[in-house]
Image (cartoon, rainbow, N blue to C red; front, side, top):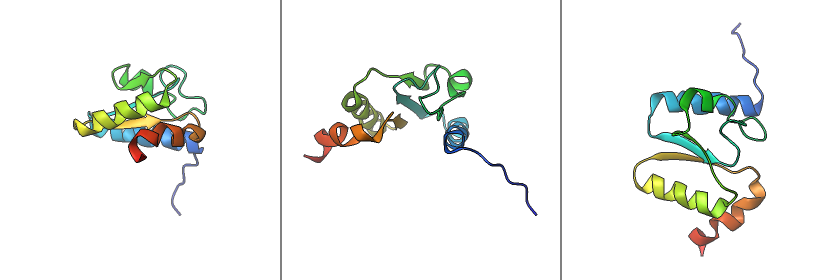
Length: 99
């Protein structure tokens, strides 16, 4: 039998993001309340302590703006992870890219 590590979805997300950030310095995360708070669901909890404000970036409440910043960063060779607090805002935030 193999040992199994049971994680919540939020904890699994935080651990997988940390693993990728440790291997690739171009990966960074941006979103609302993700730094010291660790996200409203805890899916970035602990990452700010390990990676600091340069790689864990709190954003203002403007999904369209920070998704656009993520697109621009990706075009420049970075590997952004854009964290939306709630999926409800995705359609309006992507409107500039699908019309």
